[in-house]
Amino acid sequence: MDFVRFENVSLAYQPGSPFAIEDVSLSIRENEFISLVGPSGCGKSTVMKLVTGLKPPSKGYVYVDGREVGGPQKCVGMAFQASNLLPWRTTLQNVMLPMEIVEPYRSTLRAKRAEYEEQARALLKRVGLAGFENKFPWELSGGMQQRASICRALIHKPRLLMLDEPFGALDAFTREELWCMVRDLWQEEPFTVVLVTHDLREAVFLADTVYVMSKRPGRILVKREIDLPRPRDLEVTYTEPFAAYVHELREHIGHIRES
Amino acid sequence: MLSQKTLIRLAPWLVILALGLIWEAVVVGFQVPEFLFPSLSAVWRSTLTHWDPIMMHATQTFLTTLAGFGIAVVVGLVLGAAVGSSPVIYKALYPLLVGFNSIPKVAFVPVLVVWFGIGTIPAILTAFLISFFPVVVNVATGLATLEPELEDVLRSLGASRFDILKKVGLPRAMPYFFASLKVAITLAFVGSVISETVASNLGIGYLMMAASSSMDMALVFAGLIVIGIMGVVMYELFAFAERRLTGWAHRNPNGAL
Ligand SMILES: Nc1ncnc2c1ncn2[C@@H]1O[C@H](COP(=O)(O)OP(=O)(O)O)[C@@H](O)[C@H]1O
Ligand SMILES: [Mg+2]
Image 1 (cartoon, each protein chain N blue to C red):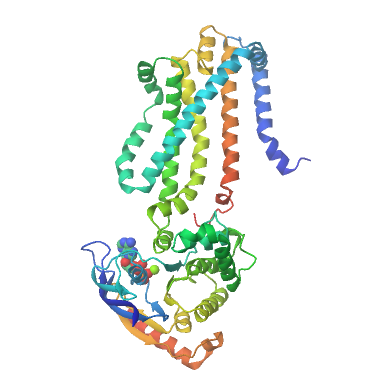
Image 2: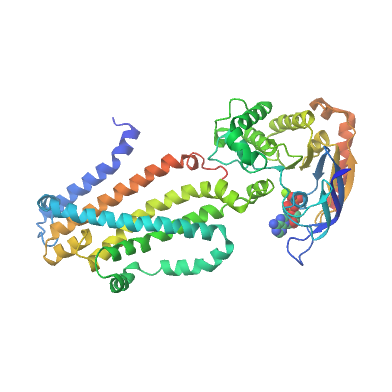
């Protein structure tokens, strides 16, 4: 049973304007980790907006968990390239934000605040932010802010995590650390992940399936299953099969750019 | 040697002292007649002689200004929240607000006098009219600067518009709001004093008008200085509140604002 399903989905931002994505069909299994790669402006973020119901499709159907998406999905976690942490809240308070909005946490927050805060602290600890709970975002490095942002996306235990170029602004070392962090979080308590990225190594390292999209209007050109054994260690990125996947995807992207 | 920090602390006082000395020296040196331009010492003597009436009128002006400012804050917050959170209201009201703001508020005083008679009420209303605009603009700006991605994060959690306003919009607008209070309080003094000079028999504005018609320039200058002092004190008070309550906005010059 597919958890997320796109059936011939097209979207134009304004009626009559050209499609941002065209005739996209894909299906994502529950707890599958997929990655979307493609040139800038090809509609990757647009796919995210369709999955989360922030935009209705102009044509076609989007299903999540067997039901057609009609309006913003509740209980999805999202993180972007900018951490978007609220500067007047501490790290802990930032991570607690979804608990103030999502049911059933929202209505029980008053009674169970201590318990929920304990969950938030535990999550922060898992991503290596123990001791930074009471710091403000501007007191954290870029990588730490991104860790906190991903905690905020996961604290309410969403079944679907949307990551839109979350590591794009980080240096190479920090980026690899965060790959491992996401891998561990996902491996320990699986959920469905859609990861948008420019970085093919990142896509191959993390994902079960990589989709390559064409230039605008975005279509799915290639679907590639990544059959590297899990759990994957950073070492895997230096192996022959890994390089072969990256190389193959790289060639598809190359064709897009030439066309 | 004075440290840099002490120097910065002392600088405004030194400037005031220097200006006072130059003032005194020029007036005494060139023997300017007092009915044209009184010396600082003459102003000081006049202040002491008229201490009680000055205090009485200053209190009147102060309370009038606070009343007008208070109304401006409430109206400014409500209008600003409406304009900032709804594109339709923004489009509908903005030209009107800008047009209204370009009318000199002294032009309203005769109208207010016809409606409410001379006295405190026109002064309160003038203070209100002149000072609510910056509050509206700042609150609206603060609310309207929500990043689209943050909005997506919140909406995909199922947040309502009101949730977003409460959790993000209002806290984000607070630094803008406090910045506008500093401007609004000084404008409110301008409004109430203008109205008092034209249409009142109470307040510093009236006191200065009466003094100038009897050629008592020392008292006029005493009035000017009193208004200035009240303005600075209130400005600093709000600047202090701003630093205390919205410190996060100032420690974070290039963060996600
Ligand atoms: N809110 C919007 N309104 C109009 N056009 C948009 C909007 N968001 C994106 N687009 C257009 O849709 C196309 C795909 O954008 P996007 O999904 O953001 O691409 P990507 O994330 O792959 O860089 C782009 O050409 C962009 O200009
Ligand atoms: Mg994008």
